[in-house]
Image (cartoon, rainbow, N blue to C red):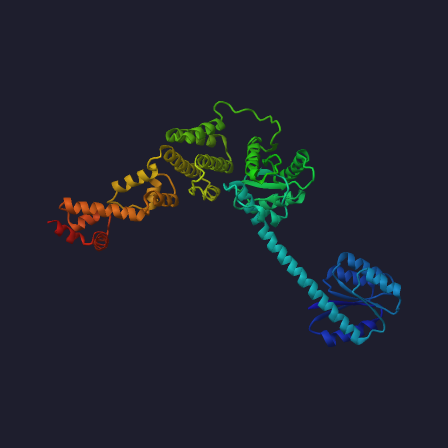
Length: 518
């Protein structure tokens, strides 16, 4: 339904137009009328009018004056001018004001019908294009943040230096520019306010200059700035970011911290730039602030027992393959972290950075290692808020990495697999699952399954069954236990099932096998 306003100081003209409209567009049009420009302006300001017939020559506000005002408050309104004068200057002025059509009086019935149909088609096409544009923009608004985050995560966490970034750069139309990183840390981020804070931060940076914004990583957001000027100036870039940071802090509140890297033109160095931004961020005071890489800072040097010292000693023991030392210093580091850091999100960040650093050390020792035990570290740390659980999870991953290093250095049987095999042999009469075995050696079940296959050439379940059946065969030879007792002793609950798999492996049932020994 379209709403049409008929404006003329002569009632006979309004009645004529209304008659034509009711007869030809009764199901499409809702008609309202006005006898002056002032009345028309009042109705337009209060109602959603689609089409207006406007007399050009009325007392008070003239038609052209009214059209000028209407176009300022409702620019999309379709206006058809009515005039008793067929004068070029009137028609030209009306068109300059945005009128859709200029019709002379007396009105021609067929011309009125044709003009209204043209106006309806124009509105439909315009609205259709607007809706399509709005839908497209809505989809882009949903997709672009995900692509931006994916691109930034790829830069930060991908270890393949040959990874092709050009599709991302082409998508953003930002190929060939130097960049710098900004890492923002926001206090008191929760699942309830995260989306709102993300939108505020994204909107602030997007409004200040061209940039790509990641989603939250715990309570941090990474922002990547392409330097679009011909002569990149680190100081001017820093000042722009500082101004945005100041406004953002006023909007969100105290406690926002930020670290900024230096400009680089080498995409392969952007991971280092992110780390530089994080290092700068870590130099900011706990109550908030911004630090730029390469600038002198008043941050005091760490004391002998500063948490950073514990971290350095921990990583030194880790790199050397000193399992006991690594565990000892991890305990000291965790204790100091809990003691000095009241914000759980910063604790999460500290553990996450420790995991990433340890993984990079492992990859430096052997870049061919494809270790996936920490692939879910980010998700788990994001959702867990219990310090003990966070500590245990981080410790398990560090020990997993440490065992890898020990194995690589000794070039002997992987200690994880040796420990698992010993565990299996010692517990054959009990229920044994992959999850239990993984927990026993402080690694993930996914990682243990993959490693077991690589080391033993068979999967965990097949190895377990083989060991159980070997023990069963030994008991059949060297003991007087019944088949039922042997079934239980080798960890099986169902004697029939035990007999079937024994026969599948050795070609006879347990009873037949024992008889053949006599």
